[in-house]
Amino acid sequence: MGESAKKQQYKEPFTYADYLTWENDDQRVEIIEGGVYDMSPAPSTNHQIVATNLVEALNSKMKENGCRVLAAPFDVRLDPRMKSVKDNEDDDVKTVVQPDISVYCDQTKLDDKGGAGAPDLVVEILSPHTQDKDMSVKLILYMKNQVPEYWIVDADKQSINQFVLDDEGFYELVATVGKKDKLKPRQFQDVKLDLSEVFDY
Image 1 (tube, rainbow, N blue to C red):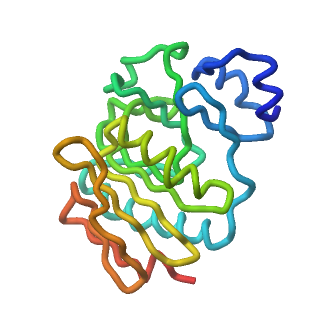
Image 2 (image 1 turned 90 degrees about the horizontal axis):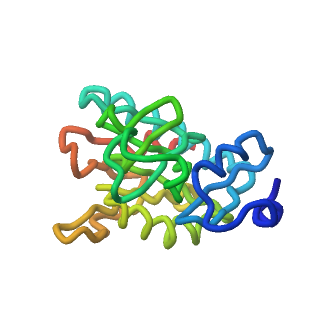
């Protein structure tokens, strides 16, 4: 069922309860603050190579910190008031997104449905269909929900923009790194990713 069909069948704002009735549809969607966003067509090969390499690199490092690295499709329910899976009712949640990669270090935020509340790190890999959303709508969304760190990855340019929350709760672009660089998640200074292995194509 496409976006227009959903809007005919349901009244905005949409909720996670609505979303659960669509989960068997062929077309994947996200709900952001009650509005429906279609997911992009199948990602490019470079997108998938980078996603796989990042998941492997993060997972090998983050396990030592008790964290879970989860790749899309994986539902993340967001609400600034949500601190664990116990803090929400499906009818109240108006945002559910599927980041390319989500890192959760607080296991109380995970259940069989996915994640509830802000991950410790979110990674989005740009594609032509999602670029504007990832760089604007989702940047604001993750900032409002106090996701501590957000990486925007450009697979074609082989670069990563690293955004970190400042002391006032706003995102600051702290680094733009490329294939020849190393990348450290701000919260985990003992973790260092070799981006030559991430952009290995």
